[in-house]
Image (cartoon, rainbow, N blue to C red):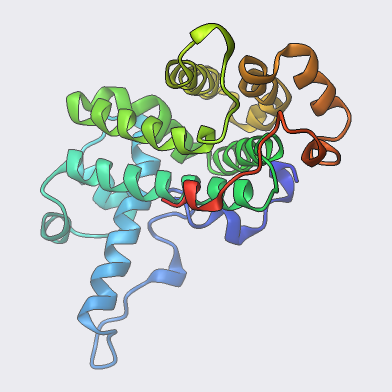
Amino acid sequence: MGPKHLRSSDVVLLPGARTGRDPARSIKPGPRRQPAGVVAATQRERLLDGLVRTVAEHGYQHATVSDICSAAGVTRPVFYELFSGKEDAFLAAHRYGTGVVVRRMAAAFAAESDWCAGIRQALGAMLQLLAGTPSFATMAVVEIEAVGPAGRRERDQLLTRFRAFFAEVPQLPGGVGVQEMVDAVVGGVYSAVYRRISSGRTDQLPDLLPVLSMFCLSPFLGPAESARRLGSGIGSRIGEDPSCTCIDPANTEQ
């Protein structure tokens, strides 16, 4: 399923998929106003959407709280009731959005019966979601560096979560450490995604699926075997070969 065929429910969950001033989320004053908890949750969602779009447009350093509030249609006093500042709001949007992405990846991964097919499906889910919401992709992948130490810690924690998708990889020959190889692969995937987004080609992210799938499989299966599996319809016969291990869906729970 390409990015043009994403269902709205697949995209709307990411911060930035809607405008902060979406009329469907307007808060009506008066005696029939929604309960305070519902109002606060709606304002928070709108602020996260407003932050993502503002940061994607102006960059983290140049985005102001006033800009974010204007994009969200929420006042500054309300912003500071919900967040301690711009960095706090940015990290909240990043955590929520990347949590959505990782859960979608885990669901796609666990739906397959073996690791090889699971990795490919997980990558596809990630690329489609980011391509479907380019403002979030820019904010979460590119602008995270501008946040400083807190942003780098958040990014490192995210990359650590991706290791769960490699829990069932085959052992490597020659005493090569599996964990070090996994870290290298995860870093390489992130770098490829970063380059595509930072160069303004977020809509082309799904085009990376074949090469990233090959990149993830090759260190553990070898280039020839990885190409064979990817070229012959991965998942159709993989379960018959022990080199692609069965996966445990519990390993991908986030």
